[in-house]
Amino acid sequence: MSETPAGTVLALCRVHQMATTDTGFGVTAIDKRPVEGPVGVRRFGVFGDFQGDREHHGGPDQAVYAYSQEDADYWRAQLGRDIPPGLFGENLRTEGVETTGAVIGQRWRIGKHLLLEVTSPRVPCATFAERMAEPQWVRRFTEAGRVGCYFRVIHKGKVQAGDPIVVESTPAHGITVGKFFSHPTVEDVLTLQALHDAGEITLSRHYDKYFPRILQGAK
Image 1 (cartoon, one colour):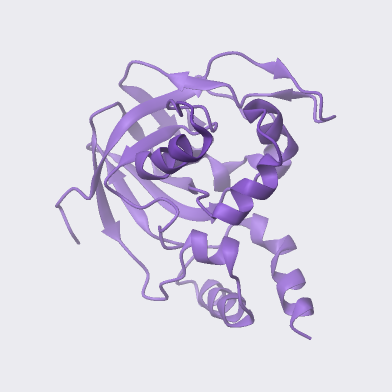
Image 2 (cartoon, one colour):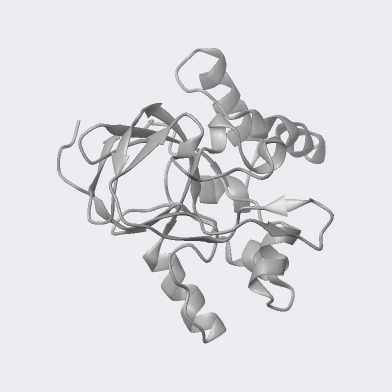
């Protein structure tokens, strides 16, 4: 187990204000902005935050969303605009550690007590497109594949800007959230399912709708 920090929390973000969407999904909490810490993180995420749609974009398997400054810098260059922490609806803006390149099941320790486990990639939606107001945003975000990652909370704790991030463990299967989002294969599905069945990793319920599609598409 490594104790050397792999990265740093640049900002901790939570909902600034709820908004009604034009997409038919009701209210959204995507408007997240940096807050002063330390702030507690529990089973359903950052204290004071809100999940507007726990069925598709929330629940304990998607309690915390992280996006790296490195990927944000890519979009700043592409879009010619600032990408401040929280713009993508992320709770954690990180630096120095992979989010899109995080391995499914990898565990991060942040600060003294918070332990998070990587679950799945972010899938862009109409609400995200509405927030960004960029032409063909869902397609562009998908094609770039810089999706960031969701976490479940293994051990609650507090987090604030400046906290070190230690990658405590990484599963040997090596399948990253970015790989699964952009180029999933039947082998990936079978590997992840076998590890889940053996109790070596715990898959997010959000994979239930993707696995059959990938397997069917290979026939």
